[in-house]
Structures are given as C-alpha cells and as structure tokens.
Length: 329
Image (cartoon, rainbow, N blue to C red; front, side, top):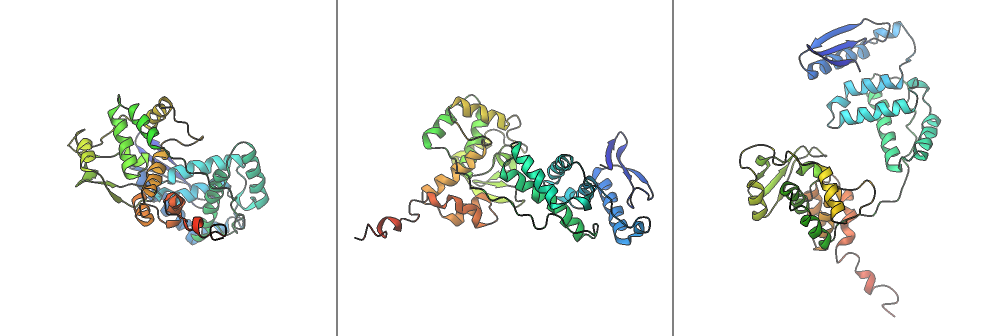
C-alpha cells in the first residue's frame, strides 16, 4: 500500500506513472487527505497517458490493480477495507500474476483448489465478484485497457440453505441463561423484537431510541430504517442510561455464543447471532404478517430476499390441500 501511518501523519509514497515515472512523497494530517491526493494523482496519470510513452504494455500485477481499485473506488465503499483485505488474500492465493496474463482457466483452477481446501460455493462466488469488480471498475475509469478475463465466468449454483430459527421454548431457554447479563439479554430482546442484525443492536445509542421506535442507521444496505417497539421495551432500554451515548459497550457476539451453548441450542456451522433475525422473520410470517411489511422491517432492498420466509405463512399455498386431484375425486 502506498499510504502508511507515520508519527507526523499519513505518508504517501507513489509513482503514478509507473515504476519508471516520477516519485511523489507527501505527508498529510489525515488519511482522507492522503487518499484524495493519491486518487487525484492516479486519475491524472490515467487521463494524460503520458506514461505510455515509456512502455507500450501494461505489466502491472494483480496486486497493483487491486491497490489502484481501492484508492480510486474501494476506499469510498462502506465495506471497502474488508473487501480490499480479501482481495489481497486472493492475490496471494493466485501468486500475484501480471494482470493481463491472468486467464479464465487460471481462475477456474484456483477456484477448484479453493473448494478442495474447504471454501464454500458462496465464498468462491464472492471471490469472483470481488475480482471481477477490480477489472470492471478500472476499465470503466480508463485505468486499464485490456479485457476483463473473468467476464464470461458464471457463479456456482448451490442449494439455498434451510432457514434456521428458534422455537418459543428455545427463546425462553436463551433468555433464562442471560439473567446474569442484563445488557446481553436486552440486545437479544431488541433483535427478536425488531429483526435487526446483531451488528445493528450491539452498538445502539440512546439517541436512536425515541417515541417507541428504534432508528437503525449505518446498516448493511446503508439505508436507515425505523422499527416500532413496545412501550415496555423502550422504558427498559432507556433505564440503562438516559444520556447520549452507546448503550451496551461491553457486550460482543462471543457472549451470545456462550449462552447458546448453555441453553443447549445447536446451530449449523457458521451461524450464531443471525439466527435471531431469522427467528423474527419466521415468527412474523407464522403470525400472519404481511410480506411487504416484513421487507421494510428487515430493510431488504428487494422483495426476492424476503420471499424465503413466505412459506411460513399459515395460508401459504393452502389450495394444494383442496385442489389436488385426490381431494376432488
């Protein structure tokens, strides 16, 4: 990475026109200023193409493309740092080839090896999305002039996982194990009452709870949403502290995993806190909730994401009972 943290600030060490071009070194007070400077210099170099006179081919490696993607685009994404971290892991996995020599079969062989080492179909599909986006974004910005080698590679299709949710007796057992940790119990109640994610409830602040509603901001989809809660729940939440600030500073998901074990609740590998979001959605439909309301409560961008819960509605496809050929004999 060409931006590093130093004692005096954020230091930039950059050759925007390639390894034979002029070297620029600057120190900035903030990381944002450093990124803006790098972004500007790379954009200017890409626009003028002055560096093409020195070399007629683009011999940048995949790691350099990933870094340029991050500076020009990824650093502005909410999950940009996480995606860049995963990209660096993928680059190392594939041996950091020269980007224009990275062929479709290279990716496919690597994907097969990744899955043989335990990666799931969903994981390698994310790999493909991340790598494709690097090429596509730089091509769109005029920073890369070769075709995207992954354009025609399709994601792997896989069976949709069964929705795992807690039954009522499991919810009772779970809350019973939280009696010694009132903050953890409160987070669980908020998740089960609103369908929010753990990552939305755990950092909740007092000012987000008002007028018998919780306003969830900084969400996965970036859209804020407001969900009603009972007067009793609001009163108990605000009893923790009425001043502004974070409500549950000393609770993390490890505490939840511990009480799951104590309550004797077993979940499939890789699932823990998200089971509460599924639990809210399933019970919402079991209690004849409206699927469009559920979409808004969960904050799903498309109805397709919410339809996985439709089958739990008591009236779902009930005509199959009375309109099949045996029923009408």
